[in-house]
Image (cartoon, rainbow, N blue to C red; front, side):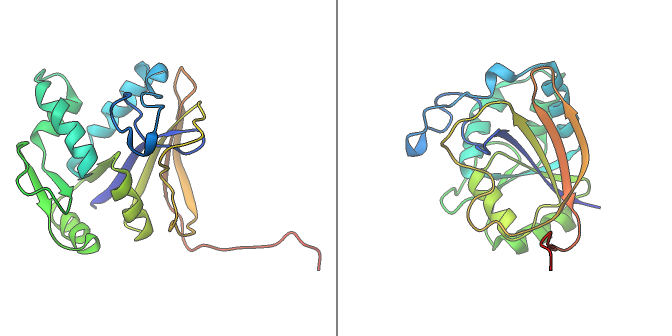
Length: 205
């Protein structure tokens, strides 16, 4: 079965913007770029390698694609699993403006998102992975197209920045299928959809 999986670095208050460096994404005046770096450790690295090992293709937004395309082709170590996967596997970019992507194995999706996701799931086995890509991530969430979430939550609050679960996110119960803790206190939680949304009441009748 092919899965659309989403891997996202989050602050404790849900911010996903620019975890890797000050210049990664300063849009909207964001001043906390690089907030993840002090918490990176071997446990996180092992978890990321484990996730990338499952990839059969990548689905990326334009901003994340540009960041990745500027970095990963320069990493040529065959023992670097993340670089090898990103440099060799198909990469699909959701963009209205990108016309001729230069990174090998890249192509731009042209149809509506639901149709493209269905086509990707028919074309690939294993996982089609989404990394970063805030705008794309929110669109996928709003259309209920994500099969599995891998949320790496770091013990820091930012107070501002783009959040993964923004306006338009619908109610959806989730099942926690895996959880682990890194040496720096980050939680790596994996969730899948768990049936229909329900409500109840503790009020006395």
